[in-house]
Image (cartoon, rainbow, N blue to C red; front, top):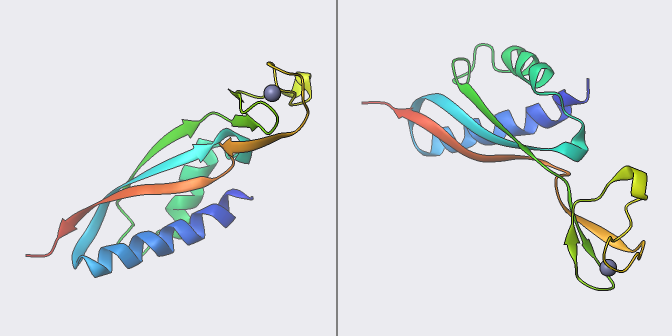
Length: 117
Ligand SMILES: [Zn+2]
């Protein structure tokens, strides 16, 4: 169910942007899904269908892109793909102090709109 907590703000942002651009409808949404969010694309799509009903988003196509998790080591600045089995350790210096820099959010990258004539 946590997919909905990402979808609602994304829908609101998309509708706001479309209004600012005087769009008739939104034809596509480009969304990046970080792997760490554990969002499942098929569930995301089906909740989106519900959330977008009777809005200008209703017929928008969802273009989803999965973003792998990336971490940055605070000790040696090495960027790596953390793995749970390694306990998120830096493969370079074995430090446990790393920061996730990518893959923990759902981001609305851009929208495609149809302008009203
Ligand atoms: Zn390191």
